[in-house]
Length: 304
Image (tube, rainbow, N blue to C red; front, side):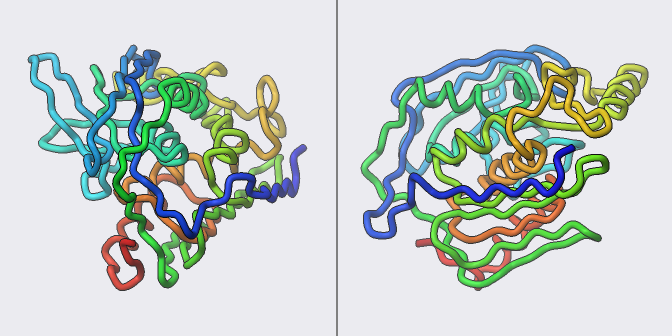
């Protein structure tokens, strides 16, 4: 049983409040391939350096030979089950949240991510494979200041017991909470820095109840629908009553993964965010609702 798991991270990589942060890209490209969570199909992603002020852009290579660019920005977001997705000119790219979280937390601002399918690989359900690839490719600063969205006053969204709020604060700090049957309350709180993300958040895997995941996979197969066709104990932390098959990687792994997804979804704001976040039972829909609410309320933040 994992009840009342509370982890307070002491920041070992503080965000400087004096020296301006510079934009960064990759020193060299990297390529990763694997099976996708929902379609179950194989996908290859090549992530390459891009110039300053370019942002994160996904380039989808279609079977007819065309290549369509889909910027990772909040107004291109499309609702998809159990994942984050963007669409432009009818072209979909989905399950982007783990790569987006890794790029955001490791402070990579400008890349082109080319993909030969509509869904990114899931790997083991965590962001660690993406972090390892980014570290191997190395970060390259670009000599231009990185502008950040600095929250000036609180903005919140909620749905039932789910609530997500961002308020003023230095750097990015997240307090997350969920409560699961047979597990009880699970909490994590800490500053999000490259170091804390890689150690405390990135290893946490997508999770779900084993019975529900297998039922969803069977339903998708019978209905010929791309839903959970790649789910297995190799691609997710599957819960059986009060335990995780194979064990938890980290104390309170489920809430840490919710924070991982949150960081990836917040990255669709288009600039790094500075503020303090409280996340109670959040998920992709609420994450994107907060980004949209914040971006539309231009009195709640400044671009510094």
